[in-house]
Amino acid sequence: MKALTKLQAAPGLSLIRTRMPKVGHNDVMIKIRKTAICGTDMHIWNWDEWAQKTIPVPMHVGHEYVGEIVRIGQEVRGFEIGDRVSGEGHITCGACRNCRAGRRHLCRNSVGVGVNREGAFAEYLVIPAFNAFRIPPDVSDDLAAIFDPFGNATHTALSFNLVGEDVLITGAGPIGIMAVAIARHVGARTVVITDVNDYRLGLATQMGATRAVNVQRQSLSDVMQDLHMLEGFDVGLEMSGVPAAFTDMLACMNHGGKVALLGIPPANTAIDWNQVIFKGLEIRGIYGREMFETWYKMVAMLQSGLNLAPVITHHFGIDDFEAGFAAMQSGQSGKVILDWSA
Ligand code: NAD
Ligand code: ZN
Image 1 (cartoon, rainbow, N blue to C red):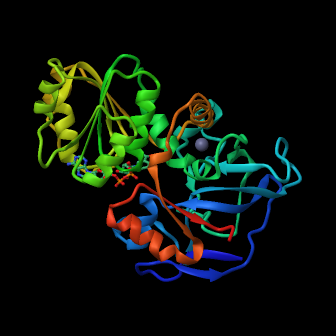
Image 2 (spheres, protein in one colour):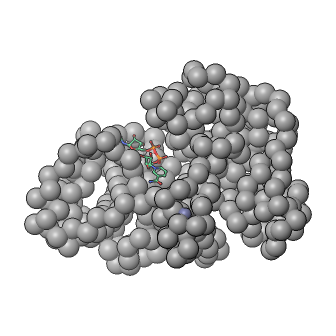
């Protein structure tokens, strides 16, 4: 089969022919139709410090996908050949305290598809059936292919009650702009998003942001005055991983505000703890997606009218994967889809 593989410990990926994966008793084999490129795949492509210490070589990567089940292990119940599925990319141990309590997203032994084991940028992917998620017919292949990052946005945005609240999102990457649409959909009053990239702020406006603010040109405090938000934001969703963005957020939160952190800042990033303590802020780290409540909510929100269409900006056939990675690298993109079906 074809697979997009890290062949050497160096930047780039290669489209090669490799052996089909084996299907274990509890696994399903998925014939991949569409995949999407994640920020993580860009780290792997660029072969940065994190990738060098994390990614085994050779290995094919990728974890955002949709496809069709073509083989089923003999112990698997609940799936049929022909089911259209995406899948949870964190494979959990099932044995630790959190797994056994049903809090699989907090598993201390999780293994990442396309990060720690072979991924979805291939004609066929094998995963435990537990991780497969059936996609209803009214959800398009394009949207099904981005359920993984849509799930990051959903898990983060739904971690606090947003009804009637004023929400600040820092970082208008694909996940931040999906969070804009979700916050709007569930009834936030005001959704302000920040970035330093005008193209992405334009997408955030299409997704329903009240204001999309380029913090290189405009200060958040001016925007808050304009919007007559004199007390500050009720909920903050940090989705940039940039320390300056988090500092801005803390300064703009109302007393008693709630902050969810998805973006991954550099280790030992310093903040002004006085903002946290004297404002009585509640801060929560977010990792991955809840299994499978986040997945259930994603489908339910799409079926109740959530529109994510503007986040998908580029499509390429898999033979043009280099153009797809270049589009991601340019910053002038939302989600980039790679089609394996051609
Ligand atoms: P991304 O890198 O595409 O988006 C980050 C955005 O932040 C970019 O558009 C960038 O221009 C913007 N930015 C830069 N400086 C800024 C500033 N000063 N203020 C505001 N914005 C600024 O990333 P993404 O794929 O959308 O993911 C968002 C974040 O979430 C990343 O940090 C990623 O590593 C992290 N992430 C975490 C998890 C998890 O499970 N915790 C999962 C997926 C992604
Ligand atoms: Zn576990």
